[in-house]
Image 1 (cartoon, helix red, strand yellow):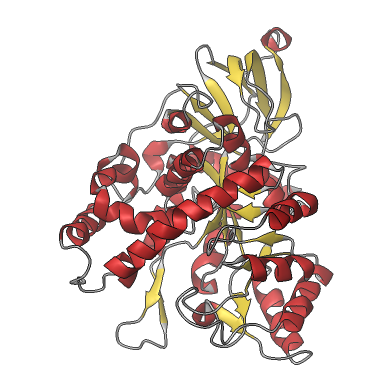
Image 2 (cartoon, one colour; image 1 turned 45 degrees about the vertical axis):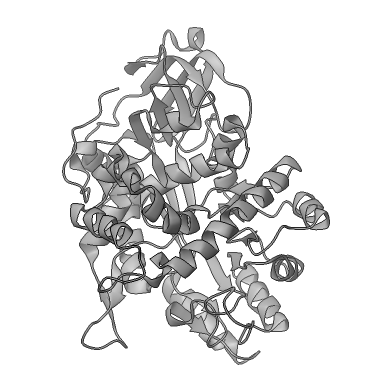
Length: 460
């Protein structure tokens, strides 16, 4: 209990908002994240990092504390991105067998999420030296960042997808010692496993994790109280992962339209699936609409040099690759993903409409991308109110923490975003941010180490 109090106090200093008195947001239109219709003239009281009262404004008239006028404003839960790979690590140019950690880049990426209204992130594959110290410092209140959940090293079969940042296991029970060492040293919040070939979709599915070994890995982490998520890219592998006992899918199948049977399976099993459209959409978007890089969120959260580099990639067509330019921006890959993204959109729409659980994830490392994911969900034909549930409550379901976060309900973690426009009228209004609250503290944007440079504090 003492450690929790110290951590909260430390975060309060970073956030720049005293937590000694309750915060009362009254006369606000509440969109609580559960899928319920918006409720006007509501009051939300926050005390000691939790929502302690959620009801009609008349109920909060006598509550003492800092008051925020919510008239003409909209309160939603803090957004969640449940599929990121946090920036801040790269290959050593002198020795490619080694990794180099760039702590500043990691902190800037985390700041970008908070600035964009994202209060929770799940990193599903990284090097431990990058993500784990940041997770520890966030939980100790030493850095201003979203709640960080992480897998650390992912787990796979040698040569399969993500093999270079994975614990590579070949057989059972020999793998138990490797998994135990990973668990003991990294304490994953959710364990990521990859069940796909390296460079999925571009060559035969070999080598790939044997299905019986996948099941043993899932059972191992379940026996240690850890949820699992599996990288797949097609329906066949998704089915095998689901029937092997996985808790979530790190992607929704993209390599072809899913069958009606799979749609029904997704609804029946209630397996949360990450949306992850932005990663593929970015490849063609950079070439066809590079002006998106001049939107306020990108200007604030991206290094000006990186924005200029991407514009140059677009101008040169991507075929004459710039030094260190990712091959994914070249013509072949961008055409491939431009074909796949509409298929993924339709799969997501159908699964969601049938009652399946879609959660928002980007497969990127920037908060502006989370907002782009919402645009793509709307483009897929999903109504804004449903999208808000996807990026809040369903994210908590993905983490297995829906009882304590993900919606604005009494007793839950006080993560919230105050908006100046109605997000149910247009999902882009989720960018009209007046205030971000994490664990009951109002974020001071002027203290965020944003890659685009300092920004003034928002005043609700």
